Amino acid sequence: MDFYQQLQLSSIGSKQWIKGAKDSKEKHKRILIYNFKVYLVVAFCFAVVTLYSMIFGSQNSVVGVLVLLVLMILRQVDFGIDTKHSIGVIFMIFAILAVGPRLANTVNTVPAFFIHFLCIMAIMILSCHNVIMSNQSTFILGYLLFYGYDVTGHNYVLRCCGLFAGAVICSLVFYKNHRNRTFHRGFYHLFKEFHLFSARSSWYLRLSFGISTAMLIGELVHMPRVMWIGIAAMSVLLPFSKDMKYRVQRRGPFNILGCMIFLILHAILPDHIFQWIGLIGGIGVGYSAGYAWQTVFNTFGALYIAENLFGLKNAIILRIAANVFGSLYAYGFDQLFRKITTSIRNLFENNSIMTDQA
Image (cartoon, rainbow, N blue to C red; front, side):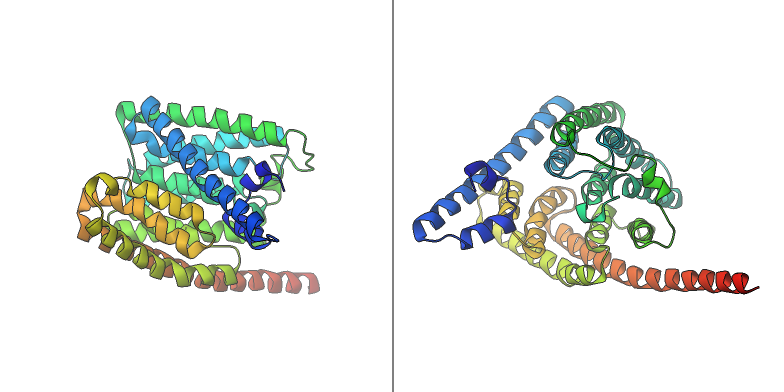
């Protein structure tokens, strides 16, 4: 494996590659490349987000974060349909991200619930035809972030411009990397192959309803930062129960651990270093191969922003409450939804059998 190929590895892949070294010299070389990769990625992320902030305003730095994340996944994964059709899908999703969160912030709680559901469902259908790719997580994360970090007036115009620019950039990169691939499905297959009781379509509904209802409850009890509830629910609402249980068991505890580490760093680090805590968290995520420690380090940046709004104590309490509730609610909702859909499917099947016999 050459230098460039090693840079393309995930954290898990890099660590496995290091373990497979035949001698200490080769191991140290691979470790050096791994460290270089982590800091290169962090530097690139910092540069992209900073550039977006300079062009489209500091309140739209979150758009830079989304574009960066989308670029990182679309370099390697596809939508399971014709490449040219996929370009249209990218623009459709970015349009949803531009309109949906802003619209949801202009209406009351119940109408906002329906907007959340429809937008998340649309993103699921458009982006996640191939469930294994998990494309939807990045786009839904963007939707929730835009809802939480809403802007109006001129800043909203700049946000739309930033999203359009991002759609163009992502489309160009996607086309360059996937233009020679052959697909047997097109855009219309995304809807043609939607079947209410299929495993994939059922998961679409389960995730869309799960996130939307979790946020609805948060809104009804006037909980700030309901996007954190939505992100926690999205993070654990996976297609397969075994994977979901794994994440539910770790989402709350490792968020608490992240909050405690943040609190310690807050106490011991001087202000001129602590202001880079989000960057430190990004480096930590780069070194983390597993979900648990990624959850820990993702806490840093979120808490740093929330502390300025709610104070340190309230930010930590809110972060823990949102993640514990979001993950546990999602697990309970998943179990209930599966039972209800199973009962409805059995009812339809029994009625169908009785009709055939008649």
